[in-house]
Length: 379
Ligand code: P1T
Image (cartoon, rainbow, N blue to C red; front, side, top):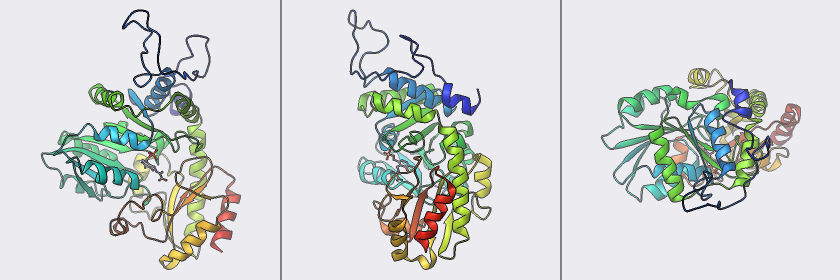
């Protein structure tokens, strides 16, 4: 089955009771048993729920994995991966990543005795220098949020395999429409399904997908034991989102490219960060591991003008100033004061998250309207 067909049919079956084409929302916490331990495969909805199960199967299918797990948020999914570790373990992580992930790592897991090395991974050779006998996990986010750096997943997987270290990839920005990390050698794929997977800015959810049963079993144990699962209603919405992922992503990519080119030629814009430009430092890797370049981009104002950046995000009308990304509607954000405010200024500026940086999540509206909106705001 090819990708577009998988988004609609992959690992899905019609409802067993009445043949419903979409899985019903099984809004139940528990399931009747005939005698203790005898049931129809479901005991309690933290452990299993048929609607969530249908979603987890769909997630596994589109990422070319075997096992899918859905959580109450993207951070809950990352938290489950971190719970595979123990005090004294070390993690090598991308240094440019979502601020909430950085906060989880440093404000919670460092306190539990996990050591993190935040490094630039655009040169995959850099990773190996930080490996010690205690390194248990490599955490890759690519494209990175918000600088759109690209990390070579295959090269990172080669290093991880050589040293028997788990490789997890946050695939939120790319989605499996653009890149499939498990095919490139990753052990775990993670999503903030709040974003492109759901696609309509109406839910908060996380996902993990794995190929290996041993890895998946550990994660299933944590999912049930810690209990950060999503509900059946949200599972249904995410499943519905997945069915149009390919058509939405196609338009996100087309509009993203048009906006990137427009901004790159605008006199009030200093830098545009978008991996589709041949001048992007990681363009060749992006071309190799992604089928297109996505709908996310960031830019700075001429002369790194903070006041101008704030004025622009205030003036934009169709691009709504809001946290989050990946929905059908265009959003703009100011990472330094919004999504990445939890990263100390000195740290975030090292990776380029300066005060004049604006991030765009380019939606699927008519491109003429999006460009006109940018034009009036920049003017
Ligand atoms: O918000 P949540 O569903 O918990 O997902 C966290 C997360 C993880 N990874 C990446 C790459 C993300 O972008 C996010 C969430 N990001 C935003 C809310 C944002 O506006 O960037």
